[in-house]
Length: 264
Image (cartoon, rainbow, N blue to C red; front, side, top):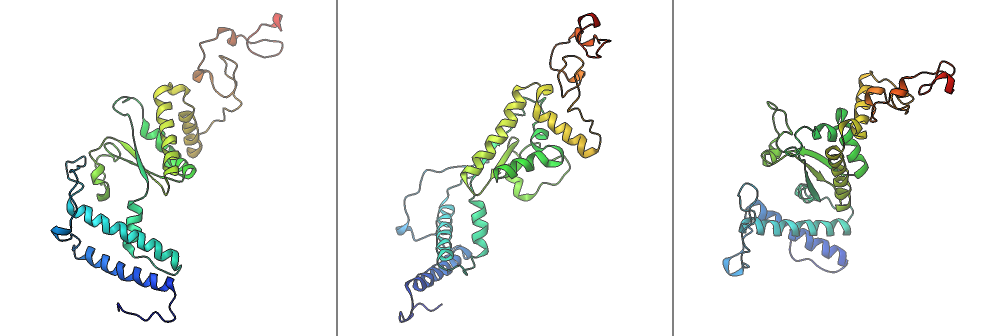
C-alpha cells in the first residue's frame, strides 16, 4: 500500500481507515513471520513466570508480545468495522474473538458422590436437558475431562488439554452475564442431586418421564391417586411418605380409600 496520499477531498474517517489498514498489514506480517519481539533495548521488564496445569510456562516473551499484537489487531478491526460497515475482518479476527469469549468451568463432584450420575442429570434424555440450559442462558456447555468420553472413542484434538482434568462443564458465551446464568443452572442441578434423595429429585423424575415419552412407553400418572397417602401424581411404590395402612381400607359405600362404610 502507498504510504503517502493527498488529503484533498479525503475525510477524516477515510484517513483513519487508511491508517488502520496500514497498521493491520504490518501486524499481520509480523505475526506471519514471527517477527514481533522488539530489540532488547526496547523490551519491558519480564513479569514473574506463570504456568498452566501441565507445568508449561504461559507468559514467555513470545507469548506476551504475540498477544499484545493480537489484542491491538482486535481493537483496530473493531474500529474499522465501526467506521465502515462494508469492512470485512480477517479470518484471524473471528478465531481470536471466539477464543476470547467469556468462559467459566464448573467442576462436577464425582469423587465426593460416586453413586450419583451427574453426567446423565446434566445431559438428560438425548441431550435435551443440556440443550434447555443452553437455550435459556444463551451459553454453550461442553462436558470435558476424565469420563466425558467413553473408552475406545476418539477425542477431538482441541480437547486434548482437558483430557487429564477432573470432569467439568466448560461454559462459553458472548457476555459474562450469560456465563453466570448458565453456571447457576449447572450448580443447581449438581446441588439438588447431591442433597436430595433420588426418589424425591423432581429433575430426575422429569427426565425419566421425558425419556419414557420419547420411547413411547409413558404412562400418564398426572391424575394417578397414590394408594398409600392419597396424594395425586405418583404411585404407591414412589410414595415419599411412610406406609399408611388405613389407605388400604376401601369404603364399600363411596368407593374411596381411608375409611370404613360406617364412617362414611
